[in-house]
Image (cartoon, rainbow, N blue to C red; front, side, top):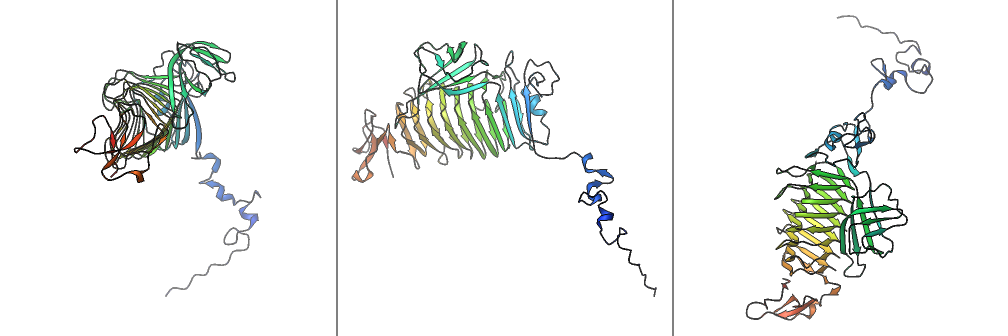
Length: 438
């Protein structure tokens, strides 16, 4: 059996056992000296990985360093700017400047897992209210600074009725600037007079996709926490048919598109668990305006839908939406303003204006109309599984208590309101569109 080993107790303050200030905090800063170093290196020698804000510029005609630090040093394509975002950046703004050709690439895929918030913003845009004037196409705003705008920039003006039951956009025009003055701009619109009650959107920066292949969008976001597109004109040329759109948002995340102008096949696709907001936009589309699908949810407000869309807003596979103060119009031979494909889809429209150009106003399942102006040839079709119309042009529906056996709630032949009608001969008068409550 070996003898026990005895270790003597060290003297106080010798650096072993007792922690005294004189030994462990020699620089008297209140911190243990060794806690400030790692393997002999000071903590200042190591880069910190912290949340950071970053602004990058894209400018086609930039001739500087090309690092995106300013307009002069801007990236020449949007894709280059997105590729250059460092992993440590969490809140990023990309400012897209007006270039000579405005062509900023074909397909841009946004997949930056570390980025919490990304905003792609036009260099100059405006969204304000008009002052009173009496000249066609002249936007007057005494408080506005129009010095950054130029002849040829795009202008959308929208007129709000402001009346109960029809307080939606009831008129609009889309034009180009022909003159810039102090407190006003003149546009190419030759008949309509924007005045008090009108709002204008001026958009200078344009992104054009010349992509003629099937694709989900030339700006595509996948599983980003938050992405915002604001103040840009997006043009998709040479694309037709299903699946070809300007913006596509997939998976989890929150997408916002505001103050943008869309021209082309399809404007926006939102799918998966994405929560989408679309506000104050102009959408001149050939196929579909906004598609909300497969579990996505969306809010659409103060947006003009026009062009030749077969459907302005469509849902499939569990898409849900809420629309308020929108204007919907088409030149399609059998166009639908709002369509839900499946019983799991649903949509509610409040104070929206549906133009007489539509064959069908509300088409599908679970569609609720409240205070809407619906001038479609067939205002409602197949509103089953919970669809309803709560008011028609501000007129309250008759009380359900007034109904008697064998009656259904039906649209009047002049489309001015609703009345209870009696079913006879196994069906109704063919000129009467019926909404049956089970």
